[in-house]
Image 1 (cartoon, one colour):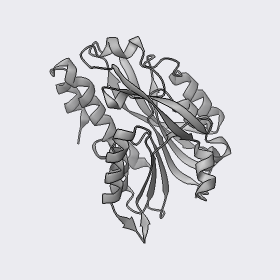
Image 2: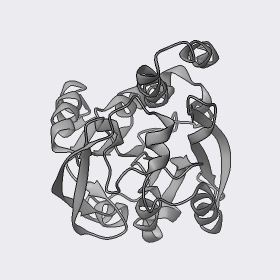
Image 3: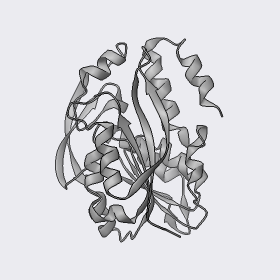
Length: 254
C-alpha cells in the first residue's frame, strides 16, 4: 500500500485529525510500509523488543511478518497497558510460548522508579513534558497533562539477563523523547542486537529530549549503520518533526 496517497490526502483533513492520521500510519508501517522487509526473519524464531508498545499495533504487525518470533513489549501507561495486555493474550502461543510478552514498565538507562506523564492525547505521554514545539506544530491537538504516575523502569540489559535472552533480532524504540536513555540502558547487550528501529526528532518535541544527531552518533559509535528511514511526521506548515530510522549492526549474524 502506498502511503504517499495518505500523506497527500492528509493535508485536506482538519488540523485536529492530522496528528492522529500520521501517528496511525507510523504505528502501522509494518503493514503499510515495505521498509522492514529488508529484515530477514526466516532464519527461525527471533526475539523482538518493542519499547513503547502502546496498544500493541507494532507488535501484532511485526508478527505478521515474523510469525515465529516472540515480542517482548514494554508499556508504562497503566491505562493503555490493559489494552496491550489483552492484545498480547489474544495472539496466542507458538510451541507453548506466548507470542507477545507484555511488561507494564518503562525502559531507560537505569532501573528503579520514575514519574510518567500521562497526557490527554495518550500517544504523546512520556517521561518528559511536551515542549512548545509540538504544541505549535499541532495547535488543535490537546496535549494537556492529565496526571503523573510512578512507574517501574528497567533496562534492556537487565531484562535480557533476567529472561536469559542471548540476542535479539530487532529493538524498536518509540518512547517520545526518551529513546537515547533506552539505548544507553542496553549496555553491552546492544552488541547482541542486529537491528534498531528508533524514532528521532528533528524539532525539539519534548523538554530535554535528544537531537536526532545524538542518537545517530551513539549508534554509529556502537557499530551500527543506517539502512532506511520512514514514518515521516510533518507539521501543518510542512516542517519535518520526526521520523523512524532503521539501523543494522556492522557485525555478522549469519
